[in-house]
Length: 154
Image (cartoon, rainbow, N blue to C red; front, side, top):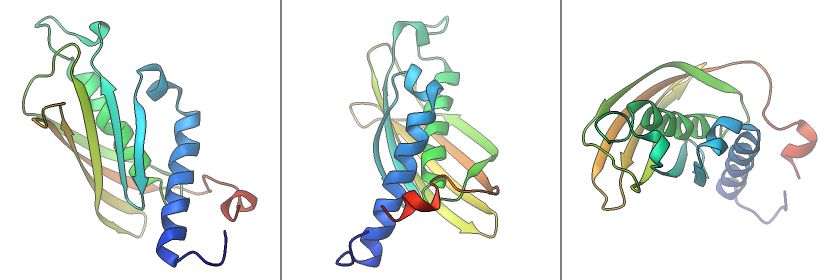
């Protein structure tokens, strides 16, 4: 990384590169049309349009698809430190229905991180900024790196 960057800028660039590397490997997220919009240390934002195949019997978005959207935001946020991290547990509360054509945005923020675990909250909003769901994820750091050492300093 260039020497003229601040420590914060270096951290943001690392976070963006880690999230992008994970996104490029995440076939499930891409298959659902989920877009990675933003990443920073401990944060991410993703977006998905509710498609017809995502509707359940009440013609609203199946909760599993909303969970997947939130889980993707969680995954990108907790992996922004070049330390592979997986879900230890997650829960979701559905606040309002989402319908075909709705554009859902999931924003994740780190609430705590220490040792091998972290806590993250995700809010899903529709295109009218209406709260659709609230998700909480607990992360667990595993061994390894997301980016190889050669790629960390590029």
